[in-house]
Image 1 (cartoon, rainbow, N blue to C red):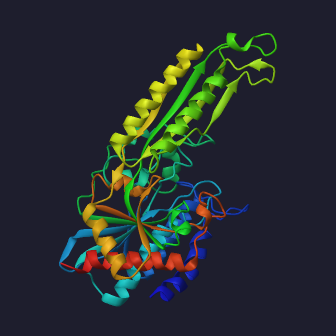
Image 2 (image 1 turned 135 degrees about the horizontal axis):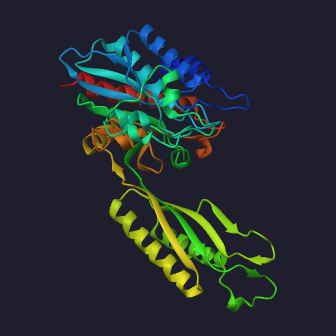
Length: 411
């Protein structure tokens, strides 16, 4: 079975990766681009040929359906997003789509018609790489996408979202799409995008929760002054204030330990001259945890510490919390079922959080959801060097197929 899936992956992954192949290496397939549309149309044709009933919804999500015999209105859904980041790898997102199609095709050939309907989904978008909006595909499926949020947005070249959509043959809904009520479970296979599985020589990750995220932009205002004539104790140095915030907060995050992570990702100092004390510094913070209470508690300490430090140094501070996404626990019953499957198959696996956001995070509050990770070599992702060993790719598809079989063929 693993050998079968390895051969199928070797045949189909290069084909799918050819749509949007970047001349500089990697993959660039942005929402509603010509490359995106070609990939969706080609995938639709392949699914048609494999005997699945295919359709696009209004916004461009592609489905391939295997009708159930006894409970056709109970759908087991699997897939991921078909778009990529700019100059990304060829596994993030699209491998989850390919894996779902290969798994369902194998199940159809092996077991025939399921009791419940099975569907592959190639979701229109997740990355937010072209337009300033993420998870457009999955948010429309569960009915939480507001058309007004994208009605006026444009990409970096000034192309309107609605115009790009229209060129591809789709149209912006007048009101939010009704959520699908027929999905009984959603299962997403994805590369880990970290190196925990590889480091521990484990082939499967059973995701228990996807982290919540709080993101800030912080502005410090002090006083620009001469670097030679301003004594140290007379300064209102915003770089020094930032450095204290960064060091103290990072130490506290390390002390609390996993799964909390804290990142100071972007720092801009003004005027940015070698012989001038920085009177203004702007920086970003990304804070993540799988537990909402722990995330909020740490964030409150973080904000209080920043204000205390700035008061001590005579620096003004403005804190803008512009993202506050709650953690998304996976369905406990499905997680337990997946763990049992791994144990019965003798797989080397671990229970783990997802430190990145995924479509499963959008589904989880609305539909019983679980997520399967497979290793990433050196933890590299969003990069042309993104890769996973062929045996791990095949084992991931096999595990997905066995999980879908349990969900669709048992009472």
